[in-house]
Length: 284
Image (cartoon, rainbow, N blue to C red; front, top):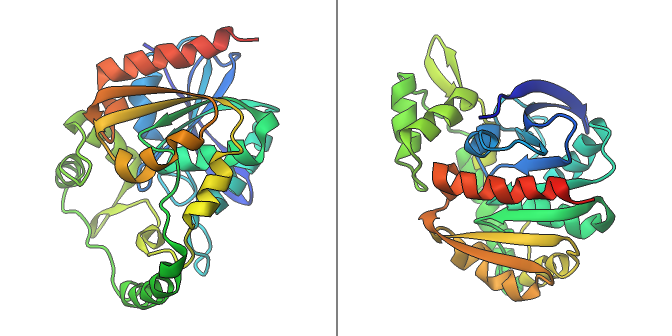
């Protein structure tokens, strides 16, 4: 089992929280979590890593990392900019990337934009960002403006106890085990005199004003040159964010496994994926 090392880096104007596992001198592999999760999404994988330098981060607005300025919304392409800054802050010329869900989309967009910086990719129940048909975009834009105005007037209700937060996370839209929920909530909550509140920036819940069209997503995926492994959970989110794009990914190994959207948090699957990731450490 691998111990972890925690620290912060200053990147792209933000303080970004980092959790490392494995060999500090090994091949660097960055892990990017999904929406509203944090670096603890990879704690189970980290327990089985030994050969590579496994670097899990809290994306900006999540976990222990800084939030964006009050007036700045959250768009997925800004995470690509953050990732570029994080890689530079870590003094890395080239990295391999692992992404879960939204993190997979960030990894894909970065690899498409900077093909010489990424050799290997692992997409865990994710691949492309959500997309919308061009003719729908004006209506989606106006709906988002109205919804954002209403949501800005609301505040999230604190949890009365840590256990209540864990139970809510474990039984959410994409369920996880109690142990996994405890790990995620340990990085995802802060205790105050009003109860346990989210570390995540509440603005993450606001609908995006600007969306991708299918053609835009396709243009990125077709530019990915890295060796890619696509991990699909049979009960995950494949219909909307994986299946539409598999034929556009030029070099990929597709692995279908029994599990849900967070299948990488199941110990047997985590062990399997860790062995694949560790094998990258043997490549020159």
